[in-house]
Length: 226
Image 1 (spheres, rainbow, N blue to C red):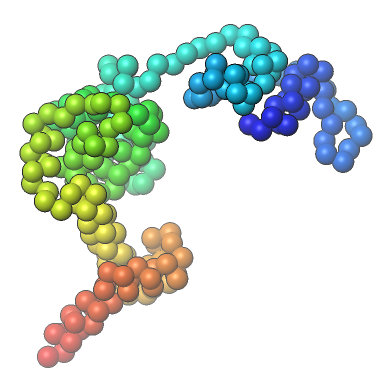
Image 2: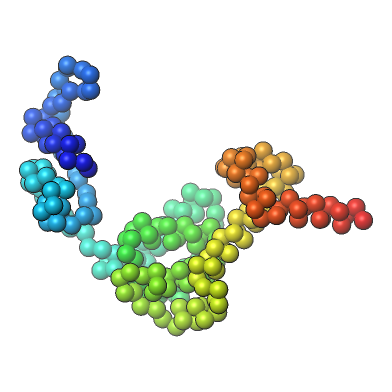
């Protein structure tokens, strides 16, 4: 929060009232503030990024939440929770969390904490490739020194193009397959397919050209005519 807004928030907390922009009427407030941050507070205070008077006004009670790497016992529960939530959101059947997958997640340090874990499950659910998901937890992607077991070494050895290349290829293949399926379901009506995929018509045309899907269709039609 910029220092100017910090000062305004401090006034609201002290006076328990505020006025809307352009208005002369005063609005009384009686609220409790729940504030969260992932910054280094002593450093922010020292560099004036955080106002000291606002900090002490807010700091009536502090709850420190350790990073996910220090709460390994919660990871299996969180994996199942996010898998259930993502499968419901994207209308897909939940994917299994094998012992190998679970161990890979336990060995990883999750520098991005819950948000990283949630996005990891989302990608796994959409791509549906366990080996690719596990390879994503390679130590090169782990800035906090997570370890890699035999699964990581094997997968890295099996992918000469590098993990980024493998991930990009898998993503492109999954995207092209989803677009082709949508086009076939709509009898190649591109506007309906775009609506089904929840992307713009222009974006769909770009993707069709990018993956050569239209050309593949014309080849099939030519083969059928002959």
